[in-house]
Image (cartoon, rainbow, N blue to C red; front, top):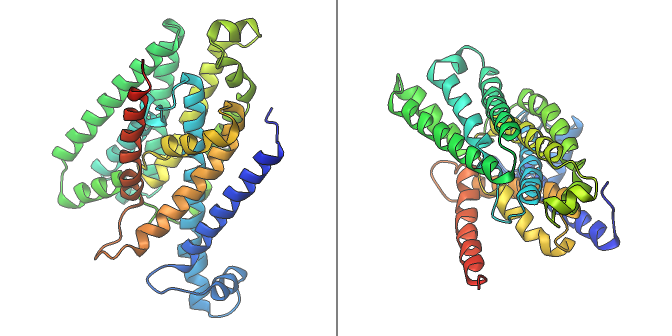
Length: 334
């Protein structure tokens, strides 16, 4: 159960405001910019039919996906950091992101994407599911968090090597281009079909992760203490892994690989919630939604000949941030 306090409510409202501001920017900015009045009229189905069509059918799905994907990645990062008790952890650590990416690459490689657009999300979710089931089997046979991390790193490396092999053996330049662009992470040219496809998985996985709030608080005292307080650590681990697989698999399936959101957002918000895992989950979801919405808007306004992928923007932000965290952690060691 997540308890709300006055500072926590203020933080949540601030993050909601940032997400709404980023969303409005995403609806206004494009090849032809529109003012707030035109956007609102377009959403309501009033005014110029061309503006209405562009706002509703092109920009609205992209904006909704930015919020969905950001919330999924932020929540997954906070839950994983709470489970592993490591602020440097992020969803890609257990191999779910790369495995979902491998599933999509397979769909591009064999031409399934040209046959039907829904095959890419389905293949990505299948890749994430296979990895999750493998991790759960390993977790049952070899208890503990460290084996889970090592297994996730191994699966992530295997998926990365398989993706490189698919790129190397791409059957034609078109397939290679599609795979590379998809792996960069983008919300461009998405439709409401992708929004509705990802939403049930994200809701289900998000509910599982939010249900672990109190158990994650107990886990900060150590696994033995958590067990003495009545926490089933094995069940907690399973719940978090399944929840992460659902939300990250669904997010990657419709947007490609957008990295570092699950690392940056929880770490930035942790000081505002007293470093308490249960109070970090929901703000991380809101912060992730705001970050991806803003990053997608920034990607569209950068003065380049071609639109920059949102995954590139988050990587440019997250890589230096991660390096600073690692250096800061090393300086804090005795």
